[in-house]
Image (cartoon, rainbow, N blue to C red; front, side):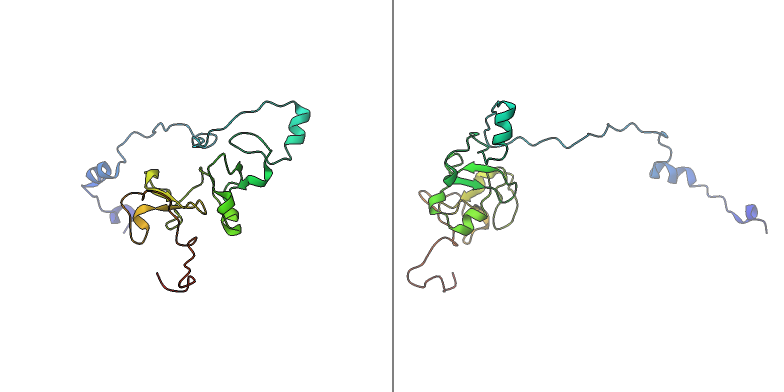
Length: 172
């Protein structure tokens, strides 16, 4: 048999094509692609500083606080573990004098804060609670026991609490 005789005619081709969309116009106009992704709005207020080119060259090698633009008080400077930006502890209300070395090394700026349990940023950031000792954030509903709202007064996470009775060896 010839190839043309072997091919069967399917009467439902037009109906299938309507479902599959082949009857749609041949070209569809899509929006243009962006050159780069839009920047997210920062939750940290920033100051813009105008410098002469000589001063800018010198200051380019200094760690300056993203919030206030100053490079002074370098002993209170914190560096975000995620983005690397520098901040004064007093500009971001971080308790640097109560933070351990590992807390300082793993500190996250307000733009990079995530729940330390889930690793995610909740839709409602008011559901995060911050440790007064290490400045890490935790989702209220993921704590053990879960909390509905932040407690009054100071709150310290389980990794910063030192139990004088069990010396942190007992299970919680």
